[in-house]
Length: 229
Ligand code: 5RP
Image (cartoon, rainbow, N blue to C red; front, side, top):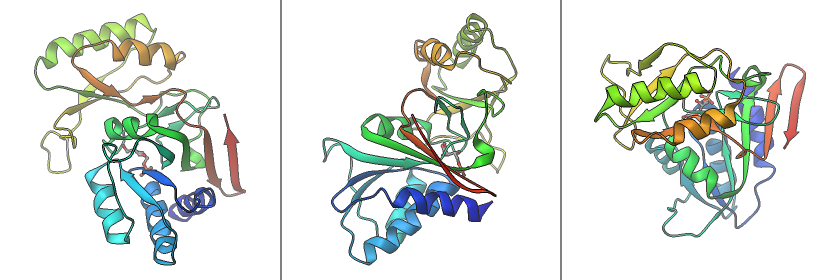
C-alpha cells in the first residue's frame, strides 16, 4: 500500500514546475510527495510551499522544502494532498489526520488541487469513512444537536464521537479545536450536507471537500489512473 501511495505521489510531482507556489498536504500519502519534492529541491528545483499542518511543516523542513505562509504570497499554483474518500465527481472526505481546516484553506487558495491516493480510497458514494467535523469545545452539546438536525435535514444519520488521540485524551487540532467523527454510511447529497454543516456556528469546518479537487491520481495493482474533473 505504501508503494502505491509513493507511486501516486511521484505521478503528481510530474505536474510541478520551477517557480511554483505549492500547497503541501497532510497524511502518509502527502508525506511521500514531500519527500520526493525534497529530492527535486536538493537537485535544484525552485519551489516554495505552504504546509497544511505542523506535522507537514516538520516533514518539509526535514526534506529541505522552503516554506512560506498565505500572508506572504497571494495565491498557490497547485496543492497536492491525500484524501480518505474520493467519489466520481471528485468530491472528497478529508480530515482522517485531523488537518481538514488548514487543508481546506490551502486548497481553496490554490489554482489547482491534485488528490493523491491508493485506489482503495475511490468510492461510488461518500460516507463509509467517518465524516470529521471540527468543532469549538464551547457549547459542544448545542453544536452536536445542531449537527444532528443538519444530518436529518439531509437524510443521513449515525453515531458521532469526539475523536481521541492515541494516549486516550481528546484529540486537539492544530487550531485548538476538537473533532466529531460521524459514521454516516452513505451521503447521497454531499454538497447539501456541506452547506448545512457550514451554517452551524460551533462548526469550524468539516471534511467534505466539494468542487475543490481538479484531478485525482489513483494508484492500484493495475497501475496509475488519473481522473480529471
Ligand atoms: C489529513 C487528511 C489526509 O489527507 C487523509 O487522512 C489521507 O491520509 P493518508 O494519505 O495517510 O491515507 O485528510 O487530515
